[in-house]
Amino acid sequence: MRVLLTLERFDKDYRLLERRNQWSRSFVKSIIDLLYIQMSQRSRTATYGPVYDTDMVPAYLDSEARDSSWYRTPAMRVANAGFLQLVAMDMADWPLTRQMVLGADLGIQVGTGTDPVTPLDKRLANRIGCGRRAPDGSNVLMDSNTLDDDQDGTIQQQYWRAQQYIPFSNFKLSSVKIKVWKSGNPTSDLTFIVRPHYRQLAYNTSPYPLDLGTVSVPASSISGSSPGTWVEFTLPTPVQLQAGHRYWMVFKTTGGDGSNQFRWRYDQSGSPFGRSMSDYPVSAVYSPVQTASSNDSGGSWTDYAGGCHMIEIYGQSYGDLEYGSCDVYGLSISGPNGEFTVRRFFENKCGSPITVNEVGLVAVGICHSTTSTTQNAHLIPTLVARDLISGGQVVANNEILKVTYTPQITV
Amino acid sequence: MPKVEIKMKPDLEVIKGEPIPHILEPGEVGAVLEWVVKEKDGNITRQGQKKSESFIRQFIEALFIYFSGQSDLLSIPVKCTDNLTRYFYPTYPGLNVSAGVGADTWGIRIGTGSTAPTINDYNVEAGIAHATMNHGAVTFGLPASDASTSQFTVTRDFSNVSGGVVTVNEIALIALLYKAQTSYTVMIIRDVISGGISVPNGQTLTINYRIQVTI
Image 1 (cartoon, each protein chain N blue to C red):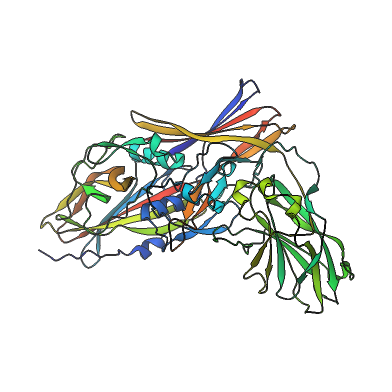
Image 2: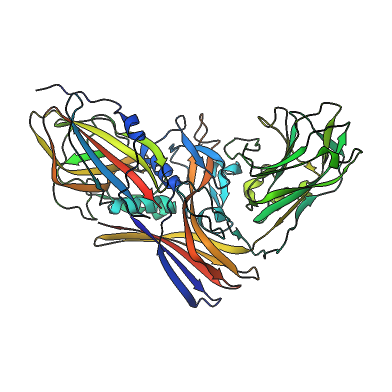
């Protein structure tokens, strides 16, 4: 089977401006993983993994069947009905919204990255977000929670603290500022780590121990008096954050004790990031923002719903494209040939040209609880293909890009 | 007649550690077909390898079903090995090829037919029954990858208990697709081996389908 990749560029009146075809050379190991799970019928008690989601967090998948009276999203699905469409694992369990992913996160994706394709790619090198945000041109304040701090969260030795964060748009995280002070005289650095969310856990969730980026600030640069000052932690390399995904802003140190510690200010009862639950994507409503603490150096976490640490989040958008639905259609068998089509439209409404250098395809994998097929099931968005576009494809403002994958067989 | 024993679990670990064959073209999604004939003491009497040439229409239809996540309102017609067309949607996980010992209608199948494959084939031309060639359980080598190629392996042993030489001309991969809670057999790959594979009585034929993608 070969897969033809076609990029077509249209003006706002849908007049074709350019078409380019290339053979896809991009199916990566994850498509083999998903086919293997299906063909070998891995059960929920004998899962296969790791298979990685698009935040590079490992998951252990199965092909468990469940009660046929319920609709379920099948493994390997790439289609979705629109960029805000949420693909439910199981409509019966829909309030357990961890079982959903944003429609934009499934199917064809585009990005600006130019890293060579490898079989072990887990995500686009730099995915273009879904939306209308223009390129920022420099690092700007993306989000903040700066009001009504009334408590201290302590950080010392094995006691770590974390703030969950769900971006509303794709951007590259460059730095965070937190309001912090030191009690006594802790001497070790205070270290910031940005970590992804562990999607496979059931209810309370926690930072997955994968450091997407980290930086330390010496204790000497932190105020010794309450309620502290704002201290910036600038990452050496910006970290890609995806809209609607959960991340954790983790802070730790190595020394100190009960009398010598860092204290991160937080608002115990306020509205996290100044938002209500209804402001968040449906995929997040069961716990929009959480704080968490660990007493074993990040090995395990205790989550607290509500409240929010004092934090400012800085970064830079490189421009969005509006994602249309991802359609799977056109199944055709004729003579020795058979094919179908996977298609997505992207419209540039961000005000600036965007250069697409990479195209990918994301499908879902599924994992269940070991004790039930009806609960605690999770959808894992998994990159199954990634192609580079030689020279890039510029999409001017108000133009439309149509990306098509056409799997073809000939016998 | 020599007594032949089918192993419940063939020696998959041998496969796992082997280099990944590179037969497919860059960008191709396909399979490498390998066959090995062994005497009872393990001596290899013949072996071969070729690019599987024939993912057939039921494979692309099944891939369409799973990529699209069709509901039962938009079921897709697929011809089953009994030559009946049924309408499938992905309520149940399908593409199951994990046939057990003695299951000679699905998993890896073998036959004596030698007609060249076409995209519309829906079953082996002339299947060989378990009573002639004992069918072991289908087993799997775990997914693995190197710098360019990813694969997993589907393996099955067939032991000749017929009392004579059996010539295997066709090899197929037949999966279960589910319609509600009932499974049906659907052929997704069929290959014909030029000249056939001669399996003397008492010897075992091992078939590997290495499902691969390359970049």
